[in-house]
Image (cartoon, rainbow, N blue to C red):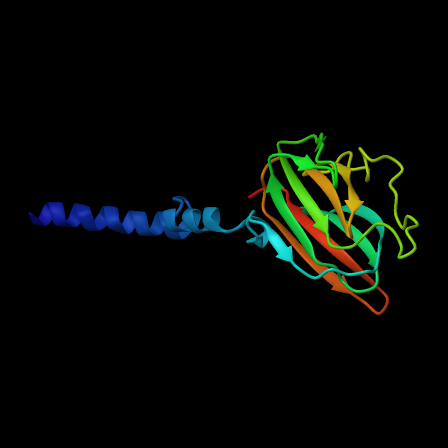
Length: 189
């Protein structure tokens, strides 16, 4: 390399360093790390979530809410926190009969709560006014439909139609006399 070539290379290198420092040229490493960051810090994944406990305390209400990064479904129960299974399925089936529950959306989550929707005397503890639209989710980012799949032999099932197969989490919250099963589904990956 001649002295002239060396000086040109040094000048080009100095120019690049100044341009990067001034923010004129984007740095590839910064772009890559920003793209690799999880959406809203969500790292839940889309595999099944389970807890095996069965509880006698019945289901009392179902409600939904919208959040900045996810949509939330809450199942209220009397007594201890229930066991549950929440997983993506090709079809949600009714409890006891096995009939397909039609759901809107690109993906379907089966929600099984290991608690009945009736009291110990057999009286209903929760009965949705509309089995096809248990909760109004109009305008939600991810949820498309919540449908009742029934209650049978101590467990209650619902179908949750979502926009696409997205990350979700399921967990329970317990207080002195009630508990809740919470299902959050992210707006995107």
